[in-house]
Length: 264
Image 1: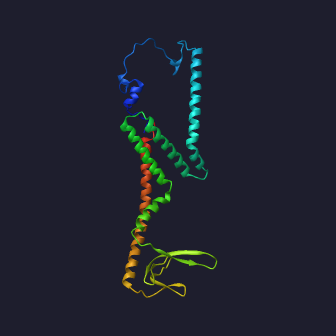
Image 2 (image 1 turned 90 degrees about the vertical axis):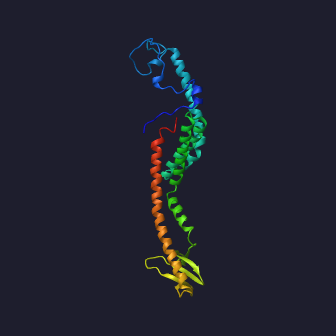
Image 3 (image 1 turned 135 degrees about the horizontal axis):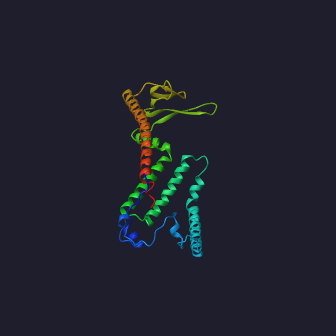
């Protein structure tokens, strides 16, 4: 995708003294005074002989001073605008640092495009909207685990608040395992591990032990519900990968179509 121009707004045309955007084939014919063969930039010289005059040097000097002023102005502005982002660019930040730079640059672009953009309103709105969409994608991509968390949370809200079996050990270690729901004086659910026990459990002499269920039908329902929960959680992880891939594909599309045309 190469750089391409966009229609100028009527306000910009008026500021430039144009009735409308001038296409190359609409340029008026001009009377040719002289022609010659030379290098690009020869027409900037004030003397047709090709010699650099004192006026040329003075003109360039003024341009250099003006450029130095604007460079200083925007250098100070950039330091103020980018100070927080720069503080986050640690050597070990990896992709997060890159995303921070892209986000900051796009945020500034959206602000300035809205105030000073030269394109027609339709094009300016489109550029701002696509830049905002890109910011949203980048924000999600900053947290790769967020794709899984969002999918998992969407499943968990439809099921009971499962509790873990907490086992403490003499050496100070602690283990969380299984998913259990309160039933009667005990708990119904399934343990974690290679050969998990499942059913109705009660604490006997401080140990979690399988026992006769006070309502086997309810225990079976809880176990079937848990099986469905595990299946949906497994599918949620697959869907999270799809979500991530779609965001990467959409980001690539947005950059390909707009990177050269966001900025006027």
